[in-house]
Length: 261
Image (spheres, rainbow, N blue to C red):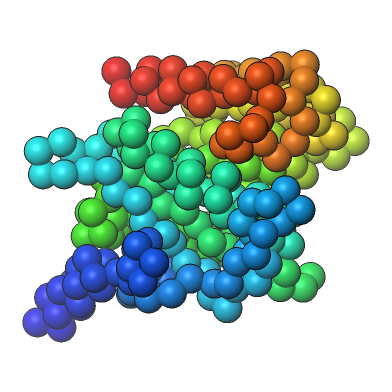
C-alpha cells in the first residue's frame, strides 16, 4: 500500500510540475517546482543562471499517446561551472530536439558552489539520469533510448556521467576540461558509444575534443567527430553563429537518425 501511494505521488508530482513561466520543472527527487532560479543577460545578451539553490530538471516532452518519442536527451548547458548558459545551450536545444522527435530534460546543475562544485554537479547528473531511467514515463518522457548532450563545461559533465553510467549515446559540443598533457583525463575516459563530437579548431578547448576522439579510437568506440576550422567557442544555437558552425545541428540530426534505425 505504501509503495502504491509513493508511485502515485511521484506520478502526480511529475504531471503537475511547475509551469509558472510555461516551463515544467521538477527537483531531482521528482517533485514539482513552480519557479526557476534567477537569470541575467550575459555579455553576449543571452540568458545565464549564475546561482541556484537546488538542482532542477526542466522538462520538454515531445511525445504523445499516438506518437511516442525516440527517447530522452539530458541537456547540460555550459558556463565554466560558474554559471549556466540556459538559453542557447539549454532550452533552445531542448526545443530543437522536440522537433526531431526526442524528449529533452535540461539539467540545471550546481554552479558557483565552491571547491566541490564539480562533484556536486556530477551527483546532480547521476540523480537526473536515475530519475529519467526509473520514472521518466511518469513525467511524460520516453525511455526508449536515453542519451546526453553537453556544451563546454556541460560537455565535461556529460562525459563524466557517461564514464560512470551507461548511456545509449553521448553528444559533446565544444567540450572543455577533457584533456591533460595531451591525453584524455581518466575521469572522462570513454566507456560506451556511440559519441557525437563537434568543435571548431580555433576554439581554445579544441585539444580536449581531439584527446577524447583519440581515446575513442583507441578503445574501438564509435565517435562521429566534426571539427571545422573556424567557429570559436560557445556558439550553441545562437542565431548569429558563424556559417562555419551553423550546420552542427544538421550533423547531429544525421547522427540521431542513424540511432533510430
